[in-house]
Image 1 (tube, rainbow, N blue to C red):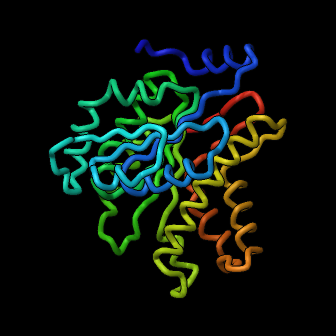
Image 2: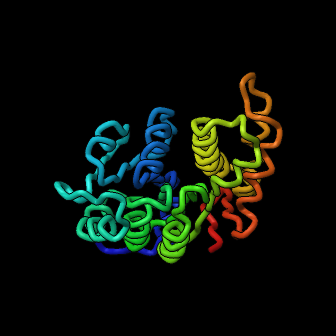
Length: 256
């Protein structure tokens, strides 16, 4: 596939009255879990891609396209092995992410997300897509912080824009929050970011990802079984060290 200029391609689609093609790609367990939810919601105009090194987990993932890396080889949580496996499938990954905007969703600190997600993002960007990484950092108690930070650094090099969510921020909600509720909340934040992109691609207003996160937090407060009111604070703080990702009616504006 011949790389193309993302801005020129998207401008041409806009001139032709076409909606931008958007792919949500999940890499590893956490990313594929989000992709399954995106697939189930059936967002109009969004295609889903699941990439994993775990054949069993990938089989359970619901997505338009599924790519198994390292077939017959156990990655066993090793980011370097996952990176090599992704590099071996770079052409396939580029073909699967041929789009105008590609979201690469992953959890960092483990093997597949940390090692393969940056390769997936780089393949998408070289194929001409505006690439946005959405990374979820592990809890500090898991002892995977160094690997996660290395993954963030590589992801930022491979993407046009990166959004980072920190699981540690959820600890501020109190001990009553179960691990399952914490992960479900993070999944909902990611889904809201995606919904915001779809909404504002056809809106004259400019917004930021932090605004969208605050919106979903407030919506959750009003739900019968929603999380406590403090949900807005830890999540928004997770964005303070990163520039906002913004989008408007004519396309996507990413700040690295």
